[in-house]
Image (cartoon, rainbow over all chains, first blue to last red; front, side, top):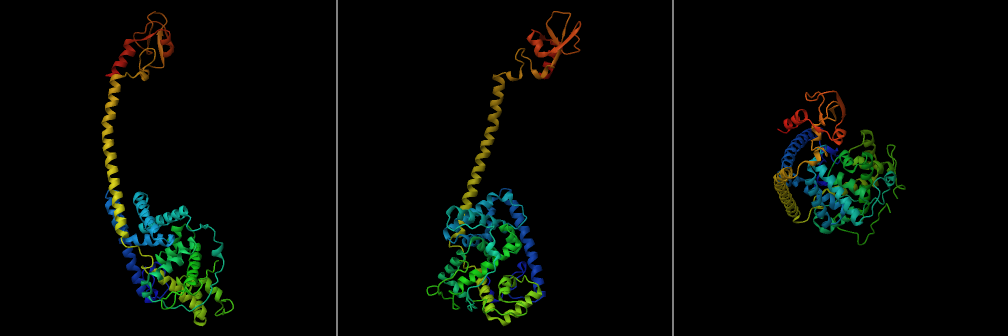
Length: 247
Length: 190
């Protein structure tokens, strides 16, 4: 997270990256180092969980601290409302505390926590009917080939553009206009950089479904944003109609 | 618009590129497919624009500022968690104290009941015998008129024995033998 593609970073070895490859040896070294880090982090996490379960509940805050931003970002992306996102993120954390003894350690604690957060956000959406519910098993759209709406050259968005609130709001709004199952795939895979298998496990859909949802989500977001967000980071929606190709 | 301008390079056209562009970004294509797309991008400016734009989208959303939590989010979360853990600690303490108080109270009630109320439900309705201490079938003497029933084999059973259910013996007015049944009762009670 937080890494600009334009700054030349290579996406983590876990997901295969693909944006700009470093030399193979470097990738191997980084991969090994990252695997060691992941193992030691999981071991430390396991110890912390044991202590919490033995009665030191105050340590739960240490356990969730590294995941707070991720949880909030996930529910905010799904609800597109700051107040609800905070409320649901808190609820998800409390639920994780209450159900910590049910955590089977088949995944990392962070993945488990995100799964709880997504379920909470789905429940909130269902209760409020804010976003029309779409069947998560209806993959008819996913199977159809996606036809981009235009091929406007949109190569460089400076990182400084994101300092502007209206640009950030425009990105949140664009994400919020996607159907929920596209948003979920995009958030887990592209924002949180989870692997296809992790995303598929959290969403309980096949890896193929994750890939097709992700493809459409990416292209739809590009179609929404490319006409409006200029290369200088300026917003052009006032003069340009935002077209949604799936409508 | 894309179809009209599509170009076919290395056996793939723009539609193939749109289908595989996401896997290309994720480096999830085999080398031949990847090479074909590389070749296509080198020659098709529309698909190149699509690729760059899609990468732009991912890069923008990956910036932590886009979905950042509001000011005070962490503090409010800690506060709520702190309240919950305190509440659960208080609840746990209350339950522990209640349980600690309930155990001696329960024992006291049970003992008082034993002292005040005889265990009627365990006694035979007619004889006052503990039903668990008397065999189902008892023996009476056919030769004596003492109206006493015995456990089979009792040395105080004289004459020819007749076996009958204990309930029937009691209904007919028989009482338990002190030596065989009474001893067994007092031994068990002591």
